[in-house]
Image (cartoon, rainbow, N blue to C red; front, top):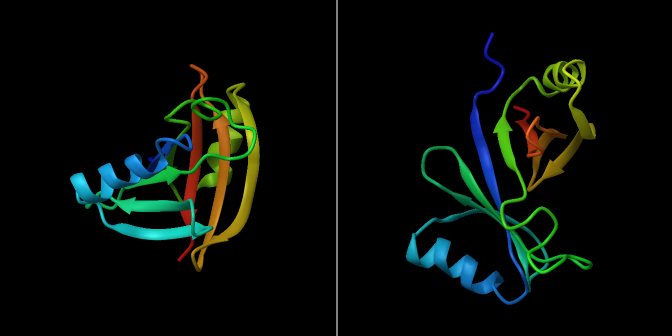
Length: 132
C-alpha cells in the first residue's frame, strides 16, 4: 500500500542577510506565487506554489540560529500523506528516531496533522496532512 502521496513542500532556511534575496529569487526571478504566509511582517514564513501541487517553504532566521540555521539551508523535506500516524509507527518499528510525535494544528486556516522523524541517513522528514 502506498502511504506517500507526493512531496508537500521543501523547506529553505535563510539567514538574516539572505532572507530578502531568497524570497526575491523565488518570487520574482522564478515567478513562484505566494500561496500562504504567516509569522510577522518583517520576515514572514512563506509557502510558494511550484505549480504542480508542491510548495517551496521559505523559513526566516530564528533567534539562536547558526550561520545557515539549524539543519542547514535545506532543513527538511515534507511528504504529503493522510497516514501520519501509521508512518510514524512503521518508522518507530524500523528503529528510526521520531523527533516530533504526530500532532494536530492549524496553518493559515487549514487543519493539519504533522510529525517529524530522522531518516536512516540522518535526514529530517516531515509528514504533512492537510485534513479535508
